[in-house]
Image (cartoon, rainbow, N blue to C red):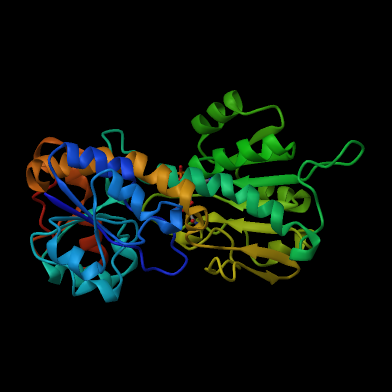
Length: 369
Ligand SMILES: NC(=O)c1ccc[n+]([C@@H]2O[C@H](COP(=O)([O-])OP(=O)(O)OC[C@H]3O[C@@H](n4cnc5c(N)ncnc54)[C@H](O)[C@@H]3O)[C@@H](O)[C@H]2O)c1
């Protein structure tokens, strides 16, 4: 196959879909890899690093889309890329179709095969291509929280770990999944007092077992949440109800319970956010203030730490990309169930039930296993 790697064109996106080691692995398996010039620069990967491992460097994305049998990207195609998609071309990237009808219609019309990172599910129902980005966002939430708690950033002027003789910060994390657990680990490392809330008792037992002593695993109900808001310097929103909008756990009235200058990092904003006053922001303008509480609601947090995120993402996507390149996508889908589950659009039809239901479009179940 010819595998193409265009440069990401979405604002504030610094990741790239393939590492130089991916070029080496794919070429060793007999494939040709074409990379757009400058595609890796946002992640600190110069063109020479790709060339050294066998990539052909191409000046324009249009040439890559015209030649490649499979495109490997990070973000969904943007309108400027819609007309470049070809029938019989495989596009392996994050799509998040259910959030975007225009994108879904454009990809269906193009005839390409959309293999979506976010629906590549293993037999336990886990989503291995989403996990690393949740790990990044969870760890980063505390780093950002620490920054916005500083007084010049309009925060309370609190140092997470305190100092001898002075209390550390109190951090409340709503949701103890991948984001929440990673946030808790980093927060604990800073020496903060951490409360980690979830509604899944099995998960709470597990977290209670593995977390350091300065993390308390608590059941998430209205009373506990309100109590926590009174104490919290930093609140991290990390809940997820799969396939649904995030539950609103903090109302606007609840903000009155919080200390002036407290900070909310609503990581769940990509699913609508779990705080009533959250609205999506960008890395260029990440925060705003409501009722004296600083809100940070960036929808693509991993984009800001592009180098870490690129490595974390490519580590998990490459083995699947190689399977698809070696076997062809239809054949790979027959034998490798997660790949079948990842195919959202094929041959001008929607092949993911949830996407079809969201937009009331016809559904073809050929990849349902
Ligand atoms: N903003 C970003 O850049 C970014 C990056 C990565 C992930 N995310 C988002 O972060 C969110 C969390 O992702 P994740 O991978 O940790 O999901 P996850 O499924 O691993 O964890 C979610 C947890 O929330 C818990 N939960 C559900 N309802 C709850 C409630 N009422 N109270 C407390 N806990 C509750 C679940 O039991 C689960 O343990 C998702 O919305 C995800 O899309 C955002």
